[in-house]
Length: 201
Image 1 (cartoon, rainbow, N blue to C red):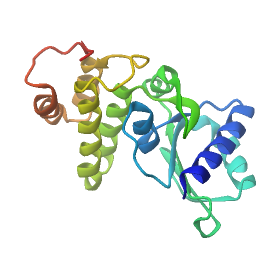
Image 2 (cartoon, helix red, strand yellow; image 1 turned 30 degrees about the vertical axis):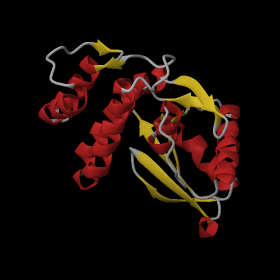
Image 3 (cartoon, one colour; image 1 turned 90 degrees about the horizontal axis):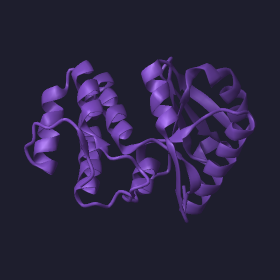
Image 4 (cartoon, helix red, strand yellow; image 1 turned 135 degrees about the vertical axis):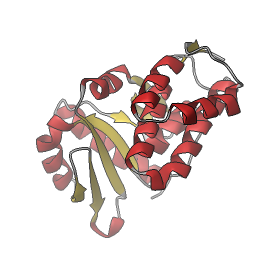
Protein backbone atom coordinates (compact mmCIF):
# COMPACT_ATOMS: atom_id res chain seq x y z
CA UNK A 1 0.00 0.00 0.00
CA UNK A 2 1.34 3.44 -0.88
CA UNK A 3 1.96 5.91 1.94
CA UNK A 4 -0.89 8.14 0.72
CA UNK A 5 -3.32 5.22 0.53
CA UNK A 6 -2.34 4.02 4.00
CA UNK A 7 -2.87 7.52 5.39
CA UNK A 8 -6.28 7.78 3.74
CA UNK A 9 -7.39 4.34 4.94
CA UNK A 10 -6.19 5.10 8.47
CA UNK A 11 -8.15 8.37 8.50
CA UNK A 12 -11.34 6.68 7.28
CA UNK A 13 -11.09 3.90 9.85
CA UNK A 14 -10.17 6.33 12.64
CA UNK A 15 -13.06 8.66 11.75
CA UNK A 16 -15.51 5.76 11.92
CA UNK A 17 -14.15 4.57 15.26
CA UNK A 18 -14.33 8.09 16.67
CA UNK A 19 -17.89 8.53 15.39
CA UNK A 20 -18.91 5.40 17.32
CA UNK A 21 -16.92 6.58 20.39
CA UNK A 22 -14.53 3.64 20.18
CA UNK A 23 -11.16 4.51 21.73
CA UNK A 24 -8.13 3.41 19.73
CA UNK A 25 -4.40 3.88 19.70
CA UNK A 26 -1.67 3.25 17.13
CA UNK A 27 0.78 0.43 17.83
CA UNK A 28 3.47 -1.47 15.89
CA UNK A 29 5.15 0.25 12.89
CA UNK A 30 2.88 3.30 12.87
CA UNK A 31 3.71 3.98 16.52
CA UNK A 32 7.44 3.65 15.78
CA UNK A 33 7.03 6.25 13.06
CA UNK A 34 5.53 8.72 15.51
CA UNK A 35 8.34 8.03 17.99
CA UNK A 36 10.82 9.12 15.32
CA UNK A 37 11.66 5.91 13.47
CA UNK A 38 9.80 5.90 10.13
CA UNK A 39 9.32 2.37 8.83
CA UNK A 40 7.56 1.24 5.68
CA UNK A 41 4.42 -0.72 6.39
CA UNK A 42 1.38 -1.76 4.42
CA UNK A 43 -0.56 -2.70 7.54
CA UNK A 44 -2.42 -0.74 10.19
CA UNK A 45 -2.30 -1.98 13.79
CA UNK A 46 -4.64 -0.56 16.40
CA UNK A 47 -5.18 -1.11 20.09
CA UNK A 48 -8.71 -0.91 21.50
CA UNK A 49 -10.97 -2.46 24.13
CA UNK A 50 -12.34 -5.92 23.46
CA UNK A 51 -15.81 -4.90 24.59
CA UNK A 52 -16.19 -2.83 21.39
CA UNK A 53 -15.91 -5.82 19.06
CA UNK A 54 -19.66 -5.83 18.32
CA UNK A 55 -19.31 -2.28 16.97
CA UNK A 56 -15.98 -2.74 15.20
CA UNK A 57 -17.03 -5.73 13.11
CA UNK A 58 -19.89 -3.99 11.23
CA UNK A 59 -17.77 -0.85 10.75
CA UNK A 60 -15.03 -2.85 9.07
CA UNK A 61 -17.51 -4.80 6.94
CA UNK A 62 -19.08 -1.53 5.79
CA UNK A 63 -15.61 -0.32 4.76
CA UNK A 64 -15.04 -3.41 2.62
CA UNK A 65 -13.05 -5.57 5.04
CA UNK A 66 -13.47 -9.21 6.00
CA UNK A 67 -12.34 -10.63 9.33
CA UNK A 68 -10.21 -13.71 8.62
CA UNK A 69 -9.03 -14.40 12.16
CA UNK A 70 -10.55 -13.51 15.54
CA UNK A 71 -9.58 -14.43 19.09
CA UNK A 72 -10.22 -12.84 22.47
CA UNK A 73 -6.97 -10.90 22.07
CA UNK A 74 -7.04 -9.73 18.46
CA UNK A 75 -8.92 -9.55 15.16
CA UNK A 76 -7.36 -9.43 11.71
CA UNK A 77 -9.06 -7.89 8.68
CA UNK A 78 -8.18 -7.85 5.01
CA UNK A 79 -9.83 -6.13 2.07
CA UNK A 80 -10.77 -7.88 -1.15
CA UNK A 81 -7.59 -8.87 -2.99
CA UNK A 82 -5.65 -6.81 -0.42
CA UNK A 83 -6.49 -3.57 -2.20
CA UNK A 84 -6.88 -1.58 1.03
CA UNK A 85 -4.28 -3.50 3.01
CA UNK A 86 -4.62 -5.37 6.28
CA UNK A 87 -5.86 -3.93 9.55
CA UNK A 88 -5.25 -5.68 12.86
CA UNK A 89 -6.97 -4.84 16.12
CA UNK A 90 -5.37 -5.84 19.41
CA UNK A 91 -7.89 -6.01 22.23
CA UNK A 92 -7.25 -5.04 25.84
CA UNK A 93 -9.56 -6.70 28.35
CA UNK A 94 -7.78 -6.25 31.69
CA UNK A 95 -7.43 -3.07 33.73
CA UNK A 96 -3.69 -3.06 32.98
CA UNK A 97 -4.45 -3.13 29.27
CA UNK A 98 -7.08 -0.42 29.57
CA UNK A 99 -4.52 1.73 31.41
CA UNK A 100 -2.16 1.37 28.44
CA UNK A 101 -4.91 2.70 26.17
CA UNK A 102 -5.72 5.50 28.63
CA UNK A 103 -2.07 6.64 28.80
CA UNK A 104 -1.92 7.10 25.02
CA UNK A 105 -1.26 10.63 23.81
CA UNK A 106 -2.26 12.47 20.65
CA UNK A 107 0.66 12.71 18.24
CA UNK A 108 1.09 13.12 14.53
CA UNK A 109 3.18 13.97 11.51
CA UNK A 110 2.66 15.16 7.96
CA UNK A 111 2.31 11.60 6.66
CA UNK A 112 -0.03 9.97 9.19
CA UNK A 113 -1.98 12.93 10.46
CA UNK A 114 -2.91 13.14 14.13
CA UNK A 115 -3.89 10.06 16.15
CA UNK A 116 -3.61 8.60 19.64
CA UNK A 117 -0.45 6.51 20.04
CA UNK A 118 0.69 4.31 22.93
CA UNK A 119 3.50 5.53 25.15
CA UNK A 120 6.92 4.10 24.22
CA UNK A 121 7.11 2.34 27.61
CA UNK A 122 3.79 0.64 26.88
CA UNK A 123 4.97 -0.19 23.36
CA UNK A 124 7.79 -2.19 24.97
CA UNK A 125 5.33 -3.85 27.37
CA UNK A 126 3.12 -4.89 24.43
CA UNK A 127 6.17 -6.31 22.67
CA UNK A 128 7.09 -8.34 25.76
CA UNK A 129 3.55 -9.69 25.77
CA UNK A 130 3.86 -10.58 22.08
CA UNK A 131 7.11 -12.46 22.74
CA UNK A 132 5.47 -14.38 25.58
CA UNK A 133 2.47 -15.27 23.38
CA UNK A 134 4.43 -16.12 20.24
CA UNK A 135 8.14 -16.90 20.76
CA UNK A 136 8.53 -17.50 17.01
CA UNK A 137 8.26 -13.72 16.52
CA UNK A 138 10.74 -12.89 19.26
CA UNK A 139 13.57 -11.82 16.97
CA UNK A 140 11.45 -9.13 15.30
CA UNK A 141 9.84 -8.00 18.57
CA UNK A 142 13.17 -7.86 20.40
CA UNK A 143 14.56 -5.78 17.53
CA UNK A 144 11.67 -3.32 17.91
CA UNK A 145 12.29 -3.03 21.67
CA UNK A 146 15.95 -2.25 21.06
CA UNK A 147 14.99 0.37 18.46
CA UNK A 148 12.80 2.19 21.00
CA UNK A 149 15.55 2.08 23.62
CA UNK A 150 18.01 3.44 21.06
CA UNK A 151 15.64 6.33 20.32
CA UNK A 152 15.63 7.20 24.02
CA UNK A 153 19.40 6.91 24.24
CA UNK A 154 19.78 9.21 21.23
CA UNK A 155 17.23 11.67 22.67
CA UNK A 156 15.11 11.39 19.55
CA UNK A 157 11.79 10.72 21.25
CA UNK A 158 9.73 13.86 21.72
CA UNK A 159 9.35 15.14 25.27
CA UNK A 160 5.60 15.01 24.67
CA UNK A 161 5.96 11.33 25.51
CA UNK A 162 6.62 10.22 29.06
CA UNK A 163 10.08 9.28 30.25
CA UNK A 164 11.02 5.63 29.85
CA UNK A 165 9.47 3.90 32.86
CA UNK A 166 11.85 1.06 33.70
CA UNK A 167 9.82 0.13 36.77
CA UNK A 168 6.71 -0.55 34.70
CA UNK A 169 8.70 -2.50 32.13
CA UNK A 170 10.31 -4.66 34.82
CA UNK A 171 6.90 -5.27 36.41
CA UNK A 172 5.52 -6.74 33.20
CA UNK A 173 8.78 -8.47 32.31
CA UNK A 174 8.59 -10.35 35.60
CA UNK A 175 4.94 -11.22 34.91
CA UNK A 176 5.87 -12.61 31.48
CA UNK A 177 8.97 -14.43 32.77
CA UNK A 178 11.34 -12.13 30.86
CA UNK A 179 13.11 -10.11 33.55
CA UNK A 180 16.59 -11.33 32.59
CA UNK A 181 15.93 -10.65 28.93
CA UNK A 182 14.83 -7.09 29.68
CA UNK A 183 17.88 -6.49 31.84
CA UNK A 184 20.01 -7.57 28.88
CA UNK A 185 18.22 -5.06 26.63
CA UNK A 186 18.92 -2.25 29.08
CA UNK A 187 22.55 -3.33 29.47
CA UNK A 188 23.08 -3.43 25.70
CA UNK A 189 21.54 -0.05 24.92
CA UNK A 190 21.56 2.03 28.08
CA UNK A 191 24.51 0.56 29.96
CA UNK A 192 24.38 -1.51 33.13
CA UNK A 193 22.22 0.01 35.84
CA UNK A 194 20.30 -1.34 38.80
CA UNK A 195 18.07 1.71 39.04
CA UNK A 196 14.50 0.81 38.04
CA UNK A 197 13.10 4.34 37.82
CA UNK A 198 12.26 6.66 34.94
CA UNK A 199 14.80 7.62 32.30
CA UNK A 200 14.93 10.76 30.21
CA UNK A 201 18.22 10.38 28.41
